[in-house]
Image (tube, one colour):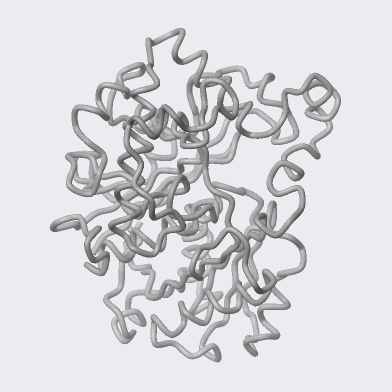
Length: 382
């Protein structure tokens, strides 16, 4: 990869549990914020990308094009869910390097806080889940990730304090960020007092429910140099998966304590960037639950299998820690836009615009996206 693609503008609506506007208005606001951030007029955009596996059909790309007066030369759709935002630059790069587009916008939005069934309704539509899991009460994402957490505890001796270390560190980062959905401090004692959702996962282990949207603008470096903000280079992209359909239930996943696509995707992204993990200054890791964040620390290669609990506690994952992770608070405390906000945060970190949550001398950031069975890794640099 020639590292000649950059993210030149980012935008995100203020995350809330329930918005006073519909998802279309939120998406339009996020895109306009990203365009303003880049100093690019909508008339210059000729490519649009979105991930439609979760975002309702009420915000299709042709609607966005009509709202902004965009005549598309490139139109890209994905169905990666939580992995989509980390994979979007890979698709944009193909269009930009092939000359099929000059300026590409990616957007993602959710309105689960305003939906009666929230994410629970979406995740229970798959036939295998409806037939085999829901009838016995084993349904919803907390149940699936609790299965991982309990088995991990059995195999490797993971403790609740290990999970608390992730939840408390990310809450502190959210408070330092200042714009996160959760602003109340979380102590270890508060964590243990948190309501049990699906044993052993407590409310503090679970991602937020959010109404909101995020967007980012990508172009080639020769165009990026003329933009309003310092361009953030796309150094490497990687995608990995396992032979498992998204229609299948978690109980059918052959490898319960590992995410096979993670190491594969990370290796590809770092290989394109020409660096190793030791060059990464901070990571925005897909943290739908504390256990998923912990497992990825291992599967990405930061430490060996079974060692993430003590590894995280010893090194520290806060902004000032030796392994800064989810410096805005992540999905646990900042917002739940399925990782789109992770890309926004990484860009702001690399531009030195993260305020009190700024990682000192940040040069390289790693972003991950998880959506069983798909996995994406994005490496960004100044």
